[in-house]
Length: 293
Image (cartoon, rainbow, N blue to C red; front, side, top):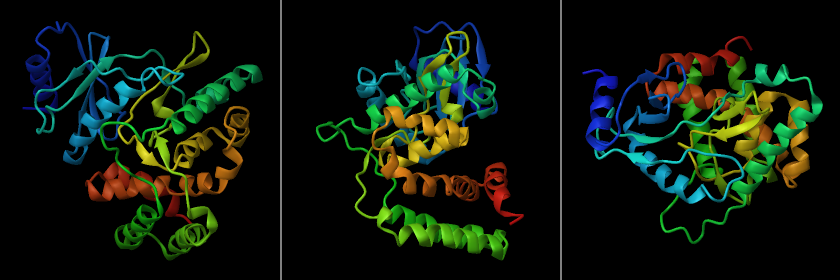
C-alpha cells in the first residue's frame, strides 16, 4: 500500500461524512509532511516521521487557540485522524487557504513600493502579535526549542555528523559563526516567546489579485523559542524589504544579532535533518553553500 492509499483509507475511516470527489497530491513542497488536496477545498497533512506524530496533535490544539488572536488567516483544523500512531494514517485536515507562496522572485517582481510596504506591515504585525501572545495559562504544555542548550547541541551535532562531509575551510567559518555568538551577551538571558518556527517563503501565502498576504501555514514547529528565528526567515527577501519591518515590529533592532545568527544556521539545520532522516536531497541542499568555501 502506498502512502497515498493508506492516507486515503485513513481519511475515509475518520471522516465518513466527507464526500471525496477529487484528490490531488501536493508535490515538491512540505519537508516534514505528505499533503493531499481533497476536492480542491481541504488540505490533509500527514507527518512523514514518527517524531512528528505527537507534534501534529499539539499543533491542532495550538491552532484552535490562536485562530481568534492573529491578524492573518491560519489553518483551521476541522478533521483529525482516529489513528494516532501509524505513519501515513495520522493526519490533520483544514480548509484550503487562498494564495500561493510568496517566493523571493515573486516579491522582487513587485515594483510598487507602497505595495511592498503593505506586505512588510502585514508580516511584521503578524509576527509581533504572535510573539507577544501570553501562554502561561494555556492548559497544555508547549514544546521548547531555541535556547543556549539547544544551540550548543546543534553545534555539537554539526561537528559530529557534518564536519566529516565538509572541507576544513567550512569548519572554520562555522566555528566562527557559533563561537562568536555563543560567547556573546546576545546568547544570554533571552526572552523566549511563542514563535512559528518555520517562517519561510513557502509558508507565507500571497493573493496576487488582492495584493496582500492571504495566510500563514505549516505550524509544525510552533512552540516556545527565540522570536528572532522567525524574523530571520524574512531575510531571504533581501535587506531592503527586511528594513521595512521596523515600522510594525518595535523591538526589531535589539534582535538583530540573533536574527543574523539564526539565518546562518538554516542550511546547516537542513543538512542535519537530511543526515538524521536519510534524506539525501535535504542533506545535499544544506551542505551545498559550504562545499566551495
